[in-house]
Image (tube, rainbow, N blue to C red; front, side, top):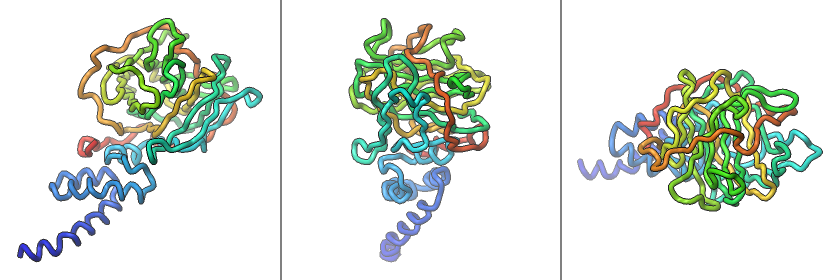
Length: 321
């Protein structure tokens, strides 16, 4: 009997791999908890499955699930779908897709306007508007002395730009008088009195290092929590939840700044493991502009995806990181 079992084991594994290839990540998570063999096979087959699905082979099942259930997802491997501008007569940020560290897709930004105006890339993520529980992405800062890596979510578009900001993220360089070389998050806009939160990683910002950023939005309580590389820097801070997200903008302000974004997720599941511990130094609070208003975009957007206003309940607790 043991000999027969050994002879059939490779066949069983091949069948299981075919099953895993056809399942969404949420069902893979449920299958993995049924036996050690199923979990081992799923982990071993994951790189090949990811290659067949056309995504980065370093992803975990948790990341696959977050992308599958996302209300909006972009690997950011190219500038396709992102509208430059709005002022075509001025020099815009240069947006260039590339692959770093092997096969990781990144959208690189350079050539800002030194505070004169927004000249990045933007898109319409939903005409109806979405209320994602999670905003997650990866970011690299190539020039730590210079501010950049701005990401803004807004509810409306007007002829002069984006209106009703929901959330703004950026990196603060050496030109600021306080909170230098750290990340900053604001749940609204300074003109309305909304506070910014400076999030400084425990180690100094490294040029070219990839940072995993995740922001949890509780729309019912109008509260946000901010995580960088899984560590909580902000918990239950206020953000403007009165209107849903329709637009996302990515841009740099300093002309010599070099930054990059990857794997932007807006949805009901976080692709990263977060919240196990709080930062040793909590985020500092400050009033005033984050160094670049996100409300200068205009022109037409590129409709990417319309769908429900909230994501389905996730099963990421079943999925390994």
